[in-house]
Image (cartoon, rainbow, N blue to C red; front, top):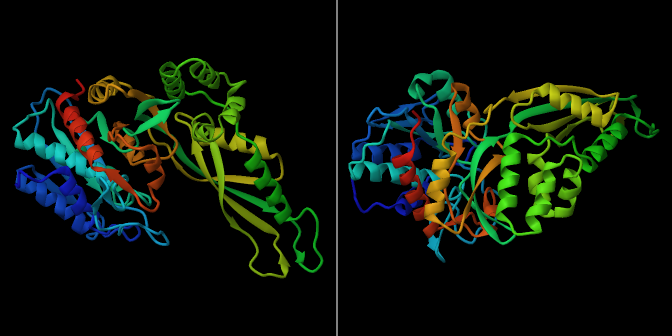
Length: 435
């Protein structure tokens, strides 16, 4: 193996593979990573539902004193269509101290850091407490059918004995009230999508009727836009808010603690403005309208309209909880059904948290580790089916404005952030293990 190959070199090469999903076409990118690991003497294998979309699983043998540790991430990326970039999105150019390109933050940057940390361990002859398993997967950005979902359902034996995993969803620096925090994702919400159906009289559009299906839809959309579902302060949200409040000076910390009082939560969120918008989904279930289907002829009043809702449940709640709350918000006269539910991780497990937090404190004494609830979902929801608890831990010290470039134009990462994250992940390999 070329000992001079840096995580930046790996990242630039990864970016140059166009793995936009759909269609994905991750094979060339996955085989590049396989070649790096094979050359280093780390055993690898490919597993695929579709030959054009393989998944790579590698294993660095440990001392057998701990259960295996899983590190995983995805190589597919979202589209760059209709976006205006300052540097070509699949060039991997370095300019102004940044590596530019689609996937630098989500999540080829993370893959490069994980791979570089594993290669460093091999190069230095380090033998971890337990085996380290690396899974580089396809299809995270759509539904995981060709990636993590396939591996979990068809090859669960690959992950036997794994208790903890490290993946995406955390590690990024954020500034709150003039203080720097590093998120460590310890839980994520559940997918729970809904379909709402409304009925009304049909008729000729030249003689409009009041109270039809479209009018009912307008009322539903207005309510969903103006009102929240009930407050729920989960254990992970309580830990997160308490840590934020402790790290902030008076009176910001005191004000933030009021989020934990359900009577005051929504008032505080409203007073917080944009920051409250970010915290809102961590304290409520959400049901967001995204797709409307109604009439198919311009001069006919539709007798039925359906509304698709992107539903997100807080950890350890059930679809029945969301159905009950949405019905309570919208009232009678609607049909509501669950169209998809992915339960995701269950009870909160903080067993690896202190170790990861300690690594961040040493890497950047200015930063405060923060247990984090992710409002979206990751491949953690699939690995959770095997009893594996994922920590989102891809440490990156980032300027705040870069977060907004994820899935958007001019996605980029500071060169120094890649080096920072690689060193932190190497420390995780050295220290992490579950008895």
